[in-house]
Structures are given as structure tokens and as C-alpha cells.
Image 1 (tube, one colour):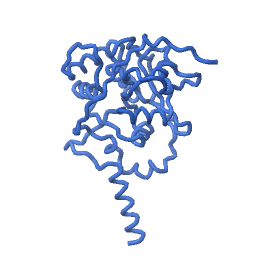
Image 2 (cartoon, rainbow, N blue to C red):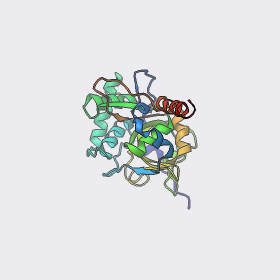
Image 3 (tube, rainbow, N blue to C red):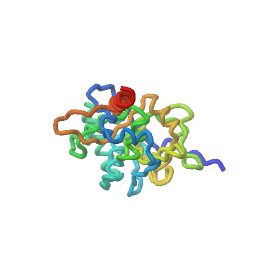
Image 4 (cartoon, rainbow, N blue to C red):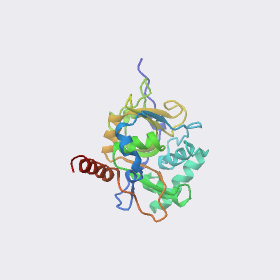
Length: 253
């Protein structure tokens, strides 16, 4: 049975790629030292961060960045019961950051992070730059706000409630990642297009397909805690290199 395609016009998009900024924190620097070996041989294979509410609905507005922020707050572990109005309000705060108050032309994931920080909702935000970092964070820390392109066939999840990024690109969209199933190689997406999209606004995408979107000008961001001095820890790869060097020194040195 082929699932009937949905009316795409009822679903708003509106994410624009954030311009590069070297000041952005890197999420990999917030992976603790003791997790180094665990990332390579972890027995943990799946995690779902609960969304304890009905899906929000941005309708056909371009307010997805604002709604991704509201959904992020609703999702565990925060569980702040934001409403559709909060999603719209967050969007308009993003537009102030963009220097385009009240404009209806979409916004940036980075602006969402700045608003959440300015409003005191988070301590700081950081961007992921690898699939390994994204997977580890979902397994161990929490959900992530995502911005990617969106294709025409992604509007309609298949019978397994999985979206596939085929067809022409129709815009950019912001949403959440709030689940990972390693054995099935699936990531859970929490959208803000109402309860009728997917299952209560949720669908899935394969690791490979999400990686394609991520590599095609995608971005992934989440809340982090920064140290009192504002300094960052060494990255996962820097620490891993240290571990490898120590191993060879201790074994053959």
C-alpha cells in the first residue's frame, strides 16, 4: 500500500544556512575525557528523548527556527510546555537578531541559539561537525536542533514512518533530532507540522540519508554548559590522539 502524498503547501519551511562564524563552540569539545574509549566500544545502542506533548504546528509559516526552539524546550530533559504562540514569538526574536524585525523570510539556527542564550534558557550553544559527535550526543546527552535542506519527497513519510531525501530541493527546514536506534541505523525527527504529520509530528531518517543532508550545508546545534573561565576542553580527536600516543609509549617505549 502506497501512502498518499500530503499537500505540501500546508507545511512551512524557512531555515536559512547560518553564515560561518569561527567563534562558534564545537560540540565535540564537550564530550568528556572518560567517554573516549566508550565511544569506540559502547554497549549503548539506542536512546529516545521523550516529547511529552502534542506536536506543535507552525502551519504554513516560515517560522521553523522558532518552532525548533520551542520543541527543544518541550523535549526531555527540559520539559517546558511551550505552545504554538511561543514558537511564533521565538521566531520574531530571531528576526531581531537577524536585523530584520518582523520580516517573514525565515531565519538561522545560530539566531535560535543566540535567542535561547539571551533569554536565559540555555547557558551556551555549540555546533556538531561530525556524525560521530551527533550520535554520541543523542545516546548520552539529549536532543539537537537541526537545519538542513528539505526535498519534496521528505514531506511524506513512508509506511515505516521513514522519510527519504529524494526529489528536488524545495527549501530549508529546522527540526529536532531526539532519538537514535543504532542497530537499525535510524535517527528520530520531531517536526512541528502538527499531530497528523508522521506520528504526533515524528518520523525517522536513516543514518546515511541524514549524513547526506548534513554534508549538504546542514547544521546541528544544542545547548551546552561552559566552564566559569569560558575555556573549552580539548576535542575528542585531540584526546584520542593522546590516548594512542600514550598506548604506544607505554607498550613499546
